[in-house]
Length: 314
Image (cartoon, helix red, strand yellow):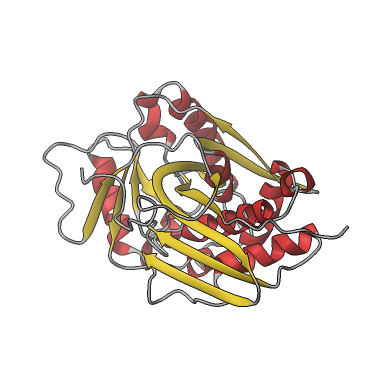
């Protein structure tokens, strides 16, 4: 099937995400109201990428940029590549902090490419978008909430990733505490053992099930529901500050976990009024993003081009 490209620019807004949420390793995720805005259009030749905000000066501005790589994979799935591309990224999601910046880039790229192809949505449905994004990322726990919004449960079947989104109880009030230091998902995964004790696996299965109930219906249970034995302790040595902050908050009754692979800390319940994280952490009180990725037509406007992070300090 031949590929026809649309002439007008397209844009997408994608939310930050926090995965694992304690016991839900590689399965549970939450979309947060902190967004990257990305626009793209087909050009006569070449590839140009501009980056404003988070990652400016560090991220590549050519074909190796993750948004472009995801677009290329999607164009291949839709049957052909355009002659050229111009991409504009306004990033607010901190890079390499455990808040899903790579998943946001991948989801943005897949959705932009689909929108740039005539009848792209009918040729690549939403389920296929999730499968493709998860294939590029390697696991679905961040791309699922980025696409669907809210609290998501993701899993993988023989034909690829699947996910559902559930509404979050109103009393869930996420705060992320973002450190200056960066983390790498690959090195965090390398710290995990090949096998875990059966008792630990059973413990996490029960707490993950409880977490679904706590997040959707009974937030008072969030502290026990976010206990984990599968990944956080194994990664603690590589993130001592993160581990110490999680333990400090949990000792005060706050349902705190490592956000994704870290080093950001996610608190799912209110921080004590007297709590002071110090100068090493930037606290952001963020709402749950219930919409997920949003696609539109046209270039980014003035508001979308503002790189100042959303959210307010708690």
